[in-house]
Image (cartoon, rainbow, N blue to C red; front, top):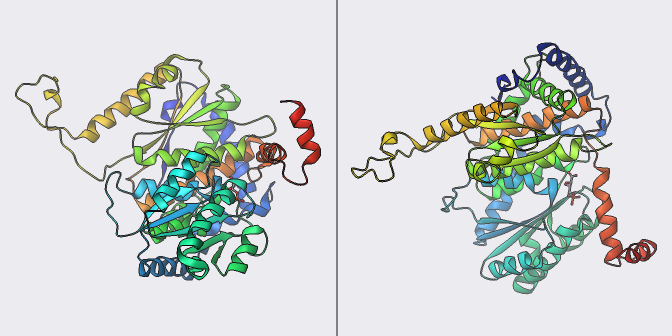
Length: 442
Ligand code: PA5
């Protein structure tokens, strides 16, 4: 289970302030659990780990098996924001970083940007592959995935015919509304539903995450099991509840010490996309009404050699939350060298993970000395279960934290502004007045 260590904040905050923020976090916990706060029509995520029916997982496995029957070796997963980051986080965390170790097809992600070069190079790969596609959009109208899907769909239809396309394209979207739902119905694509009461960034345990994870060959039941166990562990209303402690401390650091930036730190490159998923979760949930902690992330020790200087000695605006992985899944021991020209013999016989741990602990102490409070979110090892634990822990803590901050955790009104400008600048019908106004500013 996830545990939270806030010892690294002890020299920065008073016990009285901490206790007062724990009381605020407990009140926010009550609001979240009673379901009577703002955005309470988007609380479906809370029970997903226990609500997901076995039949849904079997339906995802049926897609996997039917594509195996077609010898599909590449699946393009199209989606953006909450419609891709959770799946990408799980796939990156669980995959071998260099080799293909599962018999499952290769998974690539698209529709998360509008770069022409990205799409052109994607199509270079697609044209050399036996391809299938999962297109994910809750609204069914988001431009980035729609553009990517139009291009991939056209290729699939040309290569495999209309009926071939119907067996190689699966849509994950709203049950009834949106352009993607209409298209899926018309073209006869298999479809999975994103529940109405689950927002994008909380949707990793719906078909949005489950289908790509199953297609990538990973154990989604274990992810759900880990999430369900974490949910159970967070049910206790207590000052010791790890989500309450995390939410209380981060709000205290923000509200009393003025720490406006939280950096999620990992010491394993496999968790890079945990940082990306976490940034969206907290950024979209809290950054509104002129408030919010700016979420950033680093992967160490890599980024100690780029961001380390600033974190140690730059403007004292930040605190760090390190995801501590207690055990490595693999063992690599440093050998002995009679010449010792690299002067590393003092480490011979040590595991590399020991060096990684000492780098982490050394950094923690240095950053405390440098005025950067340290929170640790600890898991046993990288596994499907612990990913489920982390997903649920951060979602639940985010709900509490945003209520402490006094914002609606479950809306994202600010995301619309750029979209409207983009539509106007692209001359989308219906945006004529705005087009004229914006073009005058250019
Ligand atoms: O969290 C969110 O709601 C957003 O990031 C969405 O997931 C993102 O904009 C994609 O939306 P959609 O699934 O409707 O295409």
